[in-house]
Length: 261
Length: 319
Image 1 (tube, rainbow over the protein chains, first blue to last red):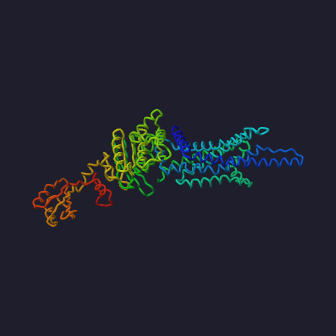
Image 2 (cartoon, one colour):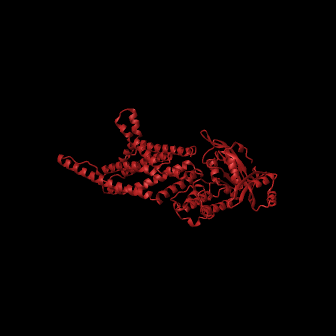
């Protein structure tokens, strides 16, 4: 596994030596911070309205502000992830192929699995580093909430975000391994991600196929996590999703040997 | 060290490499010579384990390139046509990465990197970003990369392409210096390169081997033997008559010389005959001023053209 570590190290170096990582993290934080403010303001306004209503009708208010903020925030996070992951993965293999460095990797005593895993783990690490600072907004909110919101909610949300991101990164890496063109890789990844996202629409249909499609949607499982529920079937879903695309990427990288270069 | 047997690589109906066999001994420099698209790169890619052959076998350091690919890759240093460098890395960081993926143990890495930098004259550029380097320096980084794990076999695909004449000489000297400890295959379409650096030459054309020999043998053995160039001041018709009488002389070509009355004449001599003294004697007898008389052995260039020309009369090359 020396090769895996070497590849991982190289990829992380590539992200952090070039401006890539800083631009990504910076933009991501600006967007999440802005939307967190919008969401917080929106939820507070809504809670005031609820308060007014309950005073008018004499019923006690039962609006859980922190939970609502958390749910909305993780919902927004998923949308940002949909836009950020294709850009993160578009160059993973496309660039190596274009530069000819794939030939170096593939004539070195390193297995395809090591190459693919090394790259995947590096992109996942950058993604996690990107995600981490956003917790600071939520931690303050959790600490100030009365009664205190269970930490489990926060952790489950981030676990969901990591799994969702990991799935889309695995998908994006696979697409990137199919083409030398980064733009094509990004566009196809985005389209494919969007497609498995909206499979959720099948929710409205009552047929058996509808239930299957709904299970296959990446976002459906994510929603469980944002409500603080960690469901085994969702874990299995994400892990199989990631494993499938890692396997496909390994096959695709291996097939480069058989194609006419 | 390297044994290639009946190697064939087909892309659909096209045979990029067609039934190629050759061996390379330990410590030898083998030149792979052929026009662009002759199958040089494909053969090298098969040897390095980058792509599999359609049929035939190749063994490097005793390991089959397909079945024991990982072992073979440990023993090979490979410079592809374009140096496989990461522009955002420094030279040193890049070599460190290559040493890591080539399985160089941590305690030997620094020594190996220093050695590769020294051999390629890159010591003063070690902390520079690769994207800031010129083409020649990038090429050197590419060569350093192929040396960093001290492999038994080094395969260089067009190592001097894109370099200026001074750099070309440096790279050639570097390659010559590596022979002995390493077995080297290099490909090129530049002829003088082969005669200057290689112990043996494989001439390859359209996927097939046209000749395998030392550069000297190829040059001397070729049919047609010697050509003689003469610069002389003489009436053309008389000169032709006189030269035609010399036994062994054939194909007299006469061109007007650069200055005045002089003629530039090329005479082909039959193999094994030296007719230079006869020519000189005849010219002096006739009292013509002789300015130059020299034997021109067929250059590798002529051989190459002869072997790779699409001509049925040259279908049976000597080798």
